[in-house]
Length: 186
Image 1 (cartoon, rainbow, N blue to C red):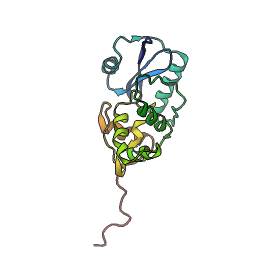
Image 2 (spheres, rainbow, N blue to C red; image 1 turned 90 degrees about the vertical axis):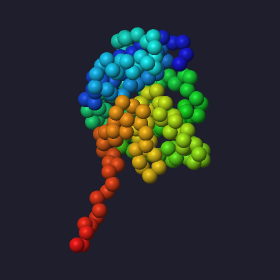
Image 3 (tube, rainbow, N blue to C red; image 1 turned 45 degrees about the vertical axis):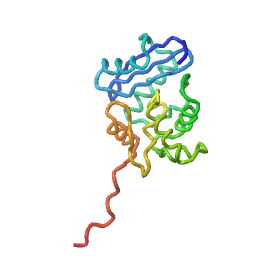
Image 4 (cartoon, rainbow, N blue to C red; image 1 turned 135 degrees about the vertical axis):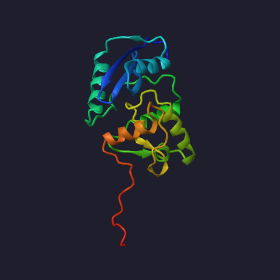
């Protein structure tokens, strides 16, 4: 992530305590909610050791406000937020750019995202790896990328797949099997 100084902020939302880190270029890390500010700070600093707590820049403050509105249930588009993805694999950056276009309440699959990028089905695994290593979860909406058959798949955030399902439910996405149109005749 270059040599730029990192700053961070831990903040409370309706979903729990989130963390955000940034440098002079843009946001570099986002920590999905945990139940405590200390746990969020620990997880964030594990990824960006040496970062210093700071008051957010106006753009970071706007991102924090958007995250708070998101966890309060408001449809939010994070695609205009400036990120610094320095140090990320070139193909992962392509994947992240494509994933940022997935809007509120929409989902896709690892395979469909790979195909959208002009790659074969074997690239679906790389899409999954990119989502697992996403440094700015939510802002790059990896929770909207599902496994084949619209199954949840993995989720490396605190709470795992349960957190992914809750975020999708917040957006009105139901992954429960549909109720049968007709009950048994007997």
